[in-house]
Length: 414
Ligand SMILES: Cc1cc2nc3c(=O)[nH]c(=O)nc-3n(C[C@H](O)[C@H](O)[C@H](O)COP(=O)(O)OP(=O)(O)OC[C@H]3O[C@@H](n4cnc5c(N)ncnc54)[C@H](O)[C@@H]3O)c2cc1C
Image 1: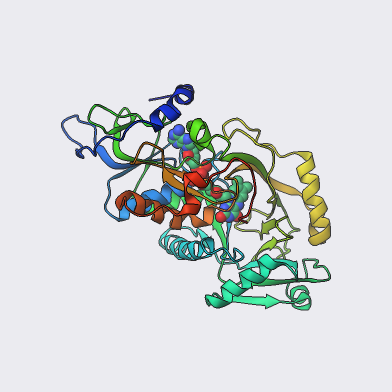
Image 2: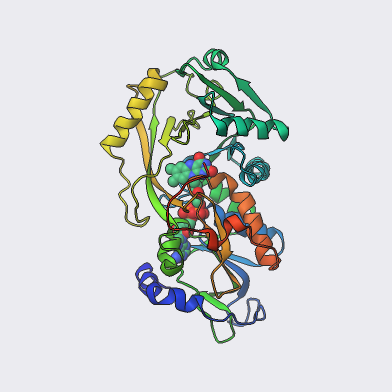
């Protein structure tokens, strides 16, 4: 098995040279037997939310799929690890992400219903901001035009419905009534189980072919097509192609504990909430499954390495969270910090995802750049990648193309 060190030292010389290599003809798939390693139709590398949903769609559509992960499924260092993620349909006037989120909400709901434990908690998602905010107005327009259940609230209605939150003069909001929260690490594992798949622990390197043209992923694993869904590790694996185009940033998450018996910060009293202040987004969760009231700041933190970054939150981060609580959720200002987590976003320059071929390899796909909002979209991303793999003429969405990935950060997707 290739070690991570082995994989990484091999990368520097591999990227563009490999990217420039001509693609071989598709080899015949051989099934297991007589000591010959199976050649799968597809090997998915990375069992985060994009990888598992890609594998799910491919398996449901009859492809023979293997999935591998360097650290296992839904692990603590993955961008898809940890407790919870927001699933909301509002994306301003963006024509792509709201429909993708809607498609994904249905798929998450179905997997959640089939599993032993819930993945989707339909707590609702409450948005609030200055009433003049254009993104919010456009979001409400989209919800109304697409007949998505929601409730608009002026300041009086917000204050009456959520007395545990301090709203400011001039603010208004709306509640997406059917959206909510996804359980993250458990959700990723549930998707894989739902597909009847198990992930192999294996640290894959950049694409290598055998004499017959099949891709060699590990000692016992070959495939005709590769999908690299490696999240924040993509620029480490493909530095010449993605270095500077996907940037992992450090993000801290805090869980505070309410007083015993205080139900104001748990569903149904409190939904998922997002304080959208012109993109200076602060968001959080009610106490889900006893994990405490969660709060996080969406602006990008320092650039980090997902393998080695410290997973301890900073005193400055805790102080920032407490200062925010004192203003918006004063009853929690002195609440104990019961749990905290450090994760990373894997940002494209503007927040758009990546779903495109590795240059020079028509059967190798790069999938990632979730950019802090990718989790909810796992089902729709996986479906799109499966379309590309199974129907190679499916056009690449220009916004998800490699060519659109710039190196200068200009975030436009929230
Ligand atoms: C703090 C935080 C809050 C977030 N909040 C939200 C939210 O509320 N709503 C939302 O929709 N999204 C949210 N996101 C974003 C979302 O979680 C990510 O966009 C998404 O999880 C990315 O998934 P991924 O599959 O691309 O990457 P990952 O989950 O990181 O998966 C990539 C996997 O690839 C594996 N891998 C890497 N290299 C190799 C290799 N060489 N060989 C084998 N395996 C390899 C890794 O081990 C990893 O498991 C949040 C992210 C963070 C960090």
